[in-house]
Image (tube, rainbow, N blue to C red; front, side):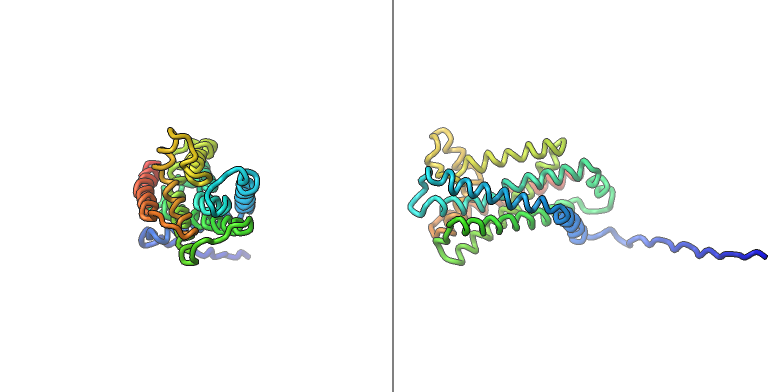
Length: 266
């Protein structure tokens, strides 16, 4: 006696009627990047530890030898350090972008009908969120190490808003660095350029204390007006916030199209 087995037909896989919209694609890219970040606790832990150690060193090791105005060096240092912390954590953004290219994830993503600007937006959204976390943690360490708000609370919140804006701006800058780096190691090395701009600025010492031939670079590069605007809002002194916003807009206007075009040619 034989039995006949009936095999059910395999249901056809339905294809989406249209490619994913840019907003949805960006959110998926951001979710993937954040999931990878949270599944590697060492990334967030080491970022916090590094931030605290650098701030501790400048505050207690070098601070006693630096004169930076009547409010004390800690009140000069912390606003600048918080404003530029993304320059230290941004190397991880460039490395992550370079790793995605090296491991083939970028190629697989580009094979899908996904808008290229959505890839940039998703990556920027995720990395801006992690950089915002670094800013908040660094600000907390600043208060722990003796910083006190010299101006008003609204001024302090406005300064925090500027720092979060800088996180977005420099995230896009580091995405561009990661896209142009030929390897993961090169991305890490190219990110060190940010240290030059951070140190040759008014972040740690007044620009007027630098040699005369170095002062023009310190004065006219973007970091100095950005830091000065944050410091002025926090300490309650006047400063040209518009110049900091102009630099932020210029960097975004230049780097965002470059990142999108780079993804198109990848």
